[in-house]
Length: 57
Image (cartoon, rainbow, N blue to C red; front, side):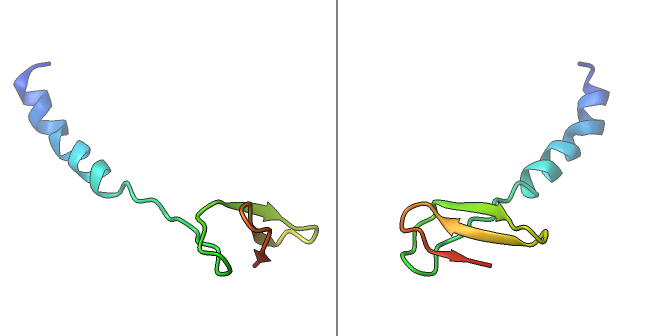
């Protein structure tokens, strides 16, 4: 690519890498990060730990 294009788009890569965050859910019962998101019958969202079976919303 021409240098002028690299200069123009260089800031985009930096912005994308700084916004690359991951939210990890942790089971409040056992501390495991193996958590699944489950949709309820009424449209609500709950979480289930696949390690210990604890569920919460």
